[in-house]
Length: 182
Image (cartoon, rainbow, N blue to C red):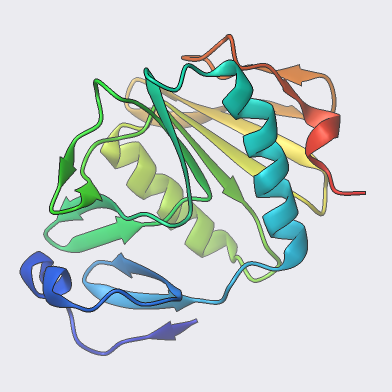
């Protein structure tokens, strides 16, 4: 991952041109991420296929890694999760970016993810008040479910089969076996 040397402010970041690649900003430093590999993309697509038919389009917004989620302005931290599910009436958009916590975030791990990077990302989601995060491991074929309890994201389950339902969207049943690309 390449890191820019200049620490950006929110105002400077807003003036930057949109790029084709994936960029997150962590504590004011731009992190350029490599594009997802095919397995990663297939899993995201399969999860979307499982989630979206069960969610009311007028009540929710389901987004994939092509949007900016502003965690904090100072120091500037933005993330691009693989999937985010917002309740439309809770979503706050400012300057064309989301400034509110989604009700569900999904991160699909890749071999390039380090434990430190993943822990930092979870700290950001925790500080932002994301109520539920799913960490999908293609290698282990598991989904770790973390839920916000007393301000801390804690693991409530790790599943590798069966049906999974988001806490705030119990109508959205996900067949775990259906997300793995065979």
